[in-house]
Picture 1: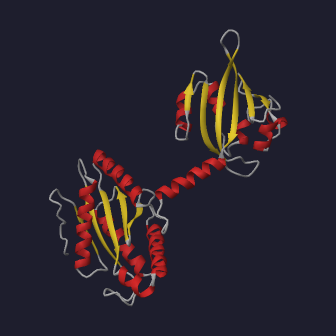
Picture 2: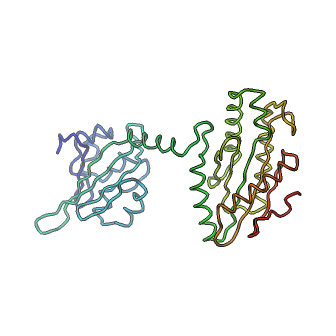
Picture 3: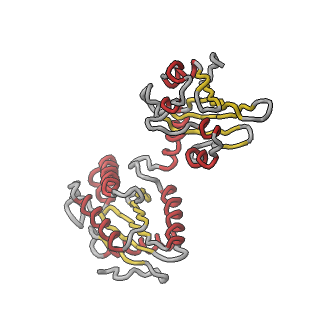
Amino acid sequence: MEHLIVPTFVIGADAKVLIWNKACERLTGFPAAEVVGTADHWRAFYADRRPCLSDLLLERRYNDIRTLYERGGNYGLSDFGVSAEDWCLMPRVGRRAYLAIDAGPIYDDYGELIAVVETLRDITAQKRAQIDLEALATRDGLTGLANRRSFDVKFGEEARRASRDLLPLSLLMIDVDYFKLYNDSQGHQKGDECLRAIAHRIADTLWRETDFAARYGGEEFTVVMPNTPLSGAMLIAERLRNAVEELHLEHGASLAAGVVTLSIGGVVGRGRDLDPVRLIAAADAALYCAKRSGRNRCIVAKFDDAHSIAAASA
């Protein structure tokens, strides 16, 4: 076991390390002399004290195993042991590593648990490749915001959550005023730069982790704000409009202003069985009213079953 190429360590029934092989030394930077005979093996993987998978298995803390590891990929628990994946800090080697971890019990002839063996595989490269692929599938390539597919999934989830908890759900539809004229006068490269700048400003303006911005398509963006009432939605909409206007992106062809501006339409839904399709239609109607009223403005209103927008022309 000492010379296995797989990083492996064994803890005894007293939770102290019996074996810490050379591959484990190379992976963690901790020599066996510092670990064997102690219960400090957690220091090789985490900055703050917390149990390793082998500790939890030894103590039969199965609920804690689920709590700590079930969010990782390939989590599994069986009579033969437990497998999990986790990001580990690896303090001694100074890097984070994503490890595939297997912990298996060792029994004596009488069925008593006398030790646990834990094996480790560094799959950081594979995990980062997976994250990159997922980002390509969920992010808009030009702006870096979530793409339309991600928006559809996220908005559906938030609508179901808001319906269940009877909390307000706000949706903003955002359109860049006279963007076609901007493209025609400035060129498509400048147009792409404009969209990127707007996307970054939108992302920077949304300070809550629960808020979600996406590129809906073309020059149109959308923002989902869970648990946000009408007053909050109106405040954020106006902040977004001001933030983009303050970029001072010159737009000589605009009929709304001399710089690039936004028209924003929004809707706030609350109640049982919120329908994402109907909420989007209502926000689109508010956006249409904002554009029809002269652009470079925000119209946000409550949603009702008739798909009307209260005070849409206010």
